[in-house]
Length: 357
Ligand SMILES: *Cc1c(COP(=O)(O)O)cnc(C)c1O
Ligand code: SF4
Image (cartoon, rainbow, N blue to C red; front, side, top):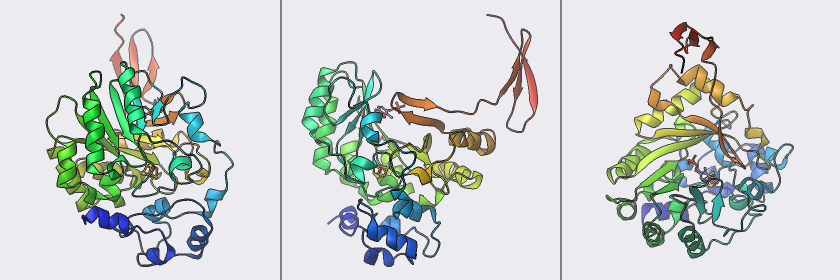
């Protein structure tokens, strides 16, 4: 058995197993006992939890909370609404479409960590939504739609599929003349870096006309280890670029120190920050959400100008009409016929001439 399979077989999803890693609080114990959702993580990721601090950013992403039963602001049937599944052209369950030239291809609903803040929770965590994961049906749809040039393979976590299944999907996509690139969304480099095996690298790697890009999800510097660094290095050596899509989470990364550290540390393991998402209004995750402006303020107050330009993600809200950028727009102070007045990250002011068109 390979290490990653051992990790999945010893998944930490009972109180007894969790107790080996942390001192469980009464509140956590009750929330676990009363949840009717999927929860749990790999022994590797559980090993990164703080034994005694219930506010540990990893604990909060993994262990159910009593607050999940409160749903004041979340939208019921969120995924159906958000992915336009009820009101547009008929598509297979596996295909989510918001754009003309690219789609999300949802191939399974198993994960190596059941994130409490998951926006696909109805499909993945609550299992109240059932999809038919017929990959061939999805491939046939993609083949018939020659405007699609970019396929984002997602889940669940698609890298938990067996190597031969992944090879099948990738080679079928590469056979479609209008497909120019393939992307994976996977938390595996963070929660199960052992999955980046030589066998998987053979499937994902190599010099091909249709490249593979990967975006992972890391929300706190504490999630980044030497093992993640090695997994990312191997992916890049094989030709796979690795980016990050973080979620802005209240009490986890919505303070300046955590937010800055996260983005700096990602670069030290060669992961390029791509997006930070506003936490979406799926049901039962109100307690993770900040005001919308928060992400833009954090970029203004601790990233832009304050640290390496490569550490800057784009802050976006993923909506039913696509992703909407919410970048800070505090830089142009004034504009007249002669000049622009601009402000930098320190509040200093400068002027540049306004050149008429
Ligand atoms: C996020 C998403 C994409 C990819 O968006 P990019 O901004 O290109 O990364 C494509 N399709 C759907 C349905 C998505 O949700
Ligand atoms: S890995 Fe992704 S799909 Fe799976 S639970 Fe976490 S956020 Fe949801």
